[in-house]
Image (cartoon, rainbow, N blue to C red):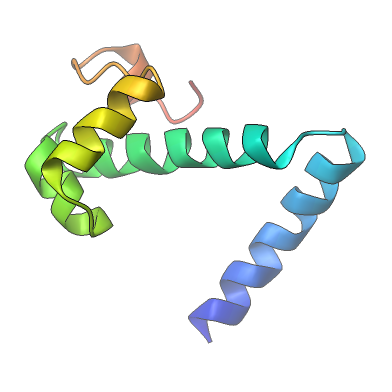
Length: 83
């Protein structure tokens, strides 16, 4: 059931991105950025807990955070879901 709800929620977003000409690389990068930021917010900015909840090694998450330009300090970029 959760998988169907996820698919139903993502389909209109994906359709809109395709209409706008967003590349797969751009979409994947932004999705990863937003997903990691949401995990960090829910884990109080703690990289170890976030890595565990995401199912990746702490160093993998740290490298991904760096490559995506995510500021892990408690500022607006981590606190607000929009940025």
